Length: 406
Ligand SMILES: [Zn+2]
Image (cartoon, helix red, strand yellow):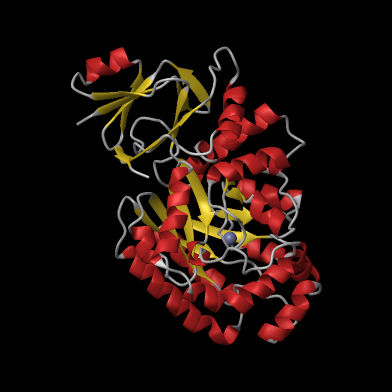
């Protein structure tokens, strides 16, 4: 049966419409006044969210690592290289400590914060079942990693197996996709072959890119903190890719690049011109002392929490608050509206799924929040700003047109 949701504000196409309602079943049918929607569908069940409520399209967190959900204070924060060493040291233990409960609690944290679609970067497939059973829509990024030529074949086969396993259970709530770990960790042959698969099968693609100063130094000059690490762990003293070489492999391939904190303007320009997006993870970047993304230079900005491996919560509301406070160079109301767009409209452009917008034929995925005061006669920027600073949990969530308990 069709349903109608009504609230004070409806976030449509980057602005807050007043006194409008949305009619939907599994997908959105129309946006209009309640009166007009009832003419289209007289028997629709109407729910009115009273007070100063806002109906947003369900938020999108395109970048998390659920397989590291057992971490709270095991991994070392404060320096990227120390963190990376601590990952090498504790990875096996953290994966062993990963339980169904921890995975579900991470998924539930996202849901409570209004996230109805998330992107899970999966290194081992240990999160497959939890993602398949999640209440949200999931883009399941099977990650490929491996810089040693001797290991390329084995790693490529393992990747293809995991991809196939995820493709066997694909549906309109579970989207198999591909993640390339980073320019320093993926051999060019592996990179080429994986992107070939992405193109042939029209899959969504993501990659970490220029997260730390150490990464940039290593890729450009084969020196810095990565040198010792690569010599010790991988018996090599030269990087497998250059920055330009890595980027050129993604030419004309729509990609979600994560971090880019150490990218130069011209590299961001290249990302912009290939219709790609940048996922900004401000808390992870701060905790690993990686610097701050120049968000003004990014054409399609998204916002992600990263995993509990480099963050203290997976709440997208916490991430929005941090981003708002961190980017002091941008006027707060303007920034707030940009950030709300980052978790909705922009993410919608980046993913090939009809989510992130309240628009006809899009999935009926909604997150409803209540503002503490009447914001009549204020700007869209003010409503966005008040939403970010005042909301700590969604009041109601709908996915596929059904109300979800959380
Ligand atoms: Zn990541």
